[in-house]
Length: 205
Image (cartoon, rainbow, N blue to C red):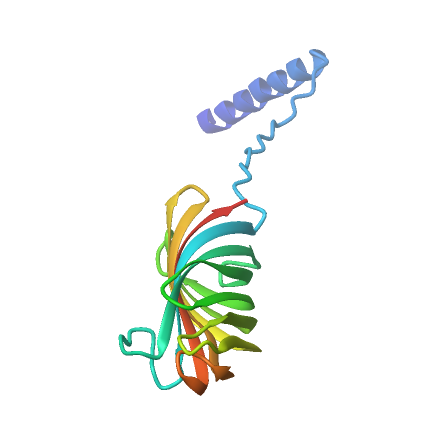
C-alpha cells in the first residue's frame, strides 16, 4: 500500500507541473545550436616565379657535363596552375633566358599534368608530364647561326614545401627537349637536348 501511495503522489505532482506549464501560455521548444564552420578552402589557383639553371647541350652530354659541347643559361620562369584536388594539378610554364654563359639565347614553354603526393601537411613530391616548345638562337665560334626549335614531350620531378600560409617553395628538374636537330651548335650538325633545374616560389589563392 505504501508503494501504491507513493506512485499516486508522483502522478499528481507531475500532472500539476504539466498543467502549470500549459497555463503559462508558453510552449517550450528545444533550442538547436548550429556550429559555425570556417571556410578554410582556397580557390585552387596559384602563380609562381622561379629562377632556372638551364643546360642546352649536344645529345651525348648531360646537364652536369663540363666538356665542350654545351652552353648554360640563367632563365626566369613564370608558372601558373590549378590544383584540381589534393593529388592532381594542371600547370603551365614559360621560361626565358636572362643571362647566358657563352653563345645561346633560349625560350621554352610547357603545359603539364602534375600528379602530386602530400608526404606531410606541408611537404609534397610531384611529377610533371606534358608537351612544350623549345627555341634556341645565337652564333657559334665559327660564325654559324644557331637556330633550333621543337615541340615535344616534356617531363620532370620535384618537391615543394609550404613555408608560410598559402606560400610554398619548390625545386624541380625538367627535361625540356631531347634529340632536337640543329644544323649548327657549339660544333656543327648535331642533335641537342635541354634540361632545367628550377627553384620557385608560388602563392596559392
